[in-house]
Length: 311
Image (cartoon, rainbow, N blue to C red):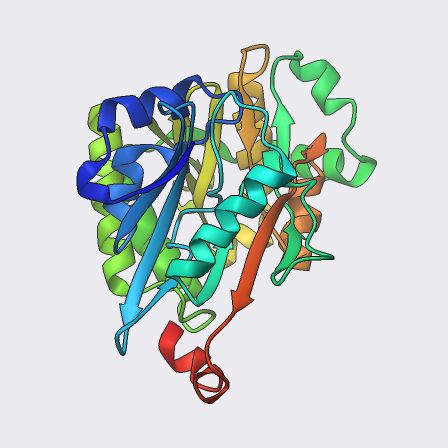
């Protein structure tokens, strides 16, 4: 049985139990994460919370539409449940009855679903990960010669890798770094994400790491969220001097050293940007791609307003 359930009627404990126990459970599907980051969201529930799917939505000009919230990389179905194409099609049909416009991410467990015969589009997005279970020697053996040389340069220049206990500062620096590059992330998104990070830090589900120069100048930093057996590289920052010093090589190599030989996966969180993808690929052993689904069933006269509706 597949049901569409309003947010107010979701059993929070049952929802989180499903996501936390699911083989494909990701932090983005947890109830608190969605409550912080989604403007509004409901859920699709299969059976007795055997599987769940968040449904993030907005309403503009009286038109409800599905969107992907900021800092929520993946959505889709979570659960220890064998998802069939038929289940998937039933769910998409249900969503299309309620929402005429959609641009949402599913998760890596749905990467084999296609849309060749159906009225929506699916394209795969990159997500590079690194299994940390192996020791550092085995992981670093995959590094290219140039990557090893750049890591060695950081050691020679005395770059320091240290804990950093102020996620709000990293978020502010990240916001300044990408200013003008995207209009998709609003001030309210940064505010909500800062509140979420404070919440997770209190629960010891967040770790910040930074790289400093020999003169103690902050060169690079990142926020790692911790959920189940995965470290999520949610936000990262690198200064202009950090770029010159290749500080990100020191940062991510040091993270791998710190957490190597543990039952963890380092999730680099992307990317489809060529330069970023090339960098993360240097440390990754897998591209765990995930699908991004879109459709536009608005009446012809409204299709031209799509961009305005999304803003």
